[in-house]
Length: 322
Image 1 (tube, rainbow, N blue to C red):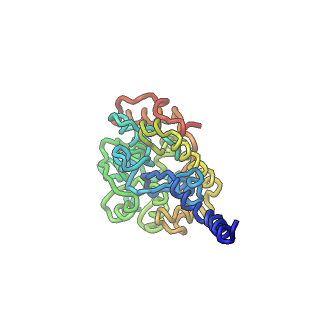
Image 2 (image 1 turned 45 degrees about the vertical axis):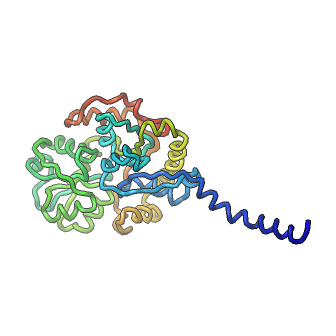
């Protein structure tokens, strides 16, 4: 081998490590996912930051919307491969003939208080139960979702008639100001916006109930959904997504209440870390059960959202099962 040949070979060998990262980046499968800025999506962001998705050959591109229902049309249109959405909105789409399937698990409500969702009212309003909310304006981030459903159930359970309540839509980040300013009479809040509202408007607002935990403890709240056809054709991609996500779930569960988790949540929710220290957390899970889906369908039927649904066993893709 001549000196020139040796130098060329050496140069080629030195160049290989520099080329490897670019090759790896090119091989990543990109998944665009619709999300909302609540505590429930912490495992997704943890998996992105900790490199769990990258280790599975996946690059996640998130797009933030006002509510889980808002992202579902984008899944149908192919704008998103998946959407983080509440169970009720997904089931309503399925009822209307859309082939959504639960692709990965996310969260359930707490068995005992505190929970991550609460109903707040203005101090001095005299409102302490559902009975006093008849004829009043009650806000959820979107209508006919799990927040609305459990809120209406709480109104009934505490003596009111949900049909006599005026339901309005207010995004979580604007809900505290709307309540404090008198545009609404009660708000169905999700963390971190429960704690943020009480800290920023503590002289004006108060919590009167944990509306999901008090009506349906340990019940289904939200999942990641995708189209049935995509799941069946590209199941291996969704298996990799689920593995990365559930590593993020473990990371979050190991750090509940710790500074590194609060900093992560602050980053995507835009709520300062100091305001997150008193948050009530949800239950982060790694499976979707037939029993919890059946319970949601039964509750939807009681509150005017019933219809024809496939059997729960048909709605849960293998990546969302234990």
